[in-house]
Length: 390
Image (cartoon, rainbow, N blue to C red; front, top):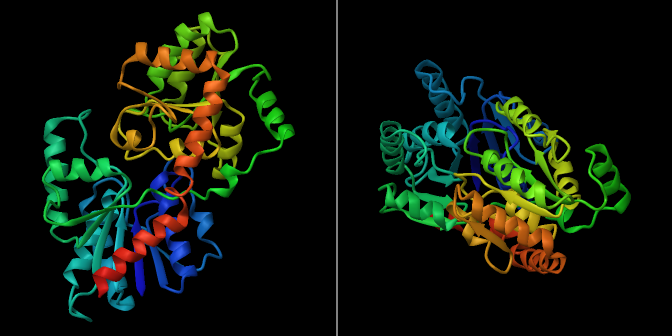
């Protein structure tokens, strides 16, 4: 099949890694794959270098940018139509908000031009633009846009059942087919144990002792990512547990604020910041830690959760969106969102019980190995495509 994938930016992120894995495996299976993206602008880091020497073609549309910009959006839309006319794809598969809107409208406008039912239009919901933590007016705006785009979508793929439920509850694509395909992870680096020397070096670099119990958080230092609640819990836990430490992996516009807050609380020797780490160092950060704690208030299904499980680490997560589809009493602890008291209790339980940490970590690894394997995800995606083109 001729397949086009479109994503707004190739920054460091779960949706971007998902898209790159999908394009690579589809191309390796013999499909003619093209990836269209805008420039990787932003402080989040970029993944564009992964497209070099890839088995698929990559096209950059400079005017496809994340902020709403009527002129740039119109130019990008026209450019997408031109590319589609040249390629004549069987499938157009969109990701992220901006590329999802422009790509679906452009593809749908050409349906039937070179084949009766083509291009078939697929959209992956990695997360939803509307959520309880922003104004009602803005939510209504986003929902209205998504409802209109849904009419130009043949099938939705979601990264968690929770995304399907939330989209349908908002009236988006209620008459359409939704399929869940958990977001794939290149599992080998997470499953393979890292040498003790490298773990020791990593800990030394960030001032972490061998005896420390380390809670790692992998998330942008950004609004709604929940670092505030982790710092609040650390304030109490640090008083009781001298060996407890926290590691924040990531960067963002709240970095200086959190560093100042940690310093003012006298926790600078207990909460460490790595800044932005390249994807190949994430397995090392997790395996150098003991527990993943994830307190984001909105997330499709945080990629860090199955990554930690693949490393055999237990997970403590706020009970939001798709988290409960992988985190349970056998693999970690779910905590009521914003409930710092519950968070403290869950953290204390795992600090005190090494056997429990080991048991939960082993259970978690077994539960996600197949579910998040690249082959599992791409098998599902490919099956969707074949059903649409046939």
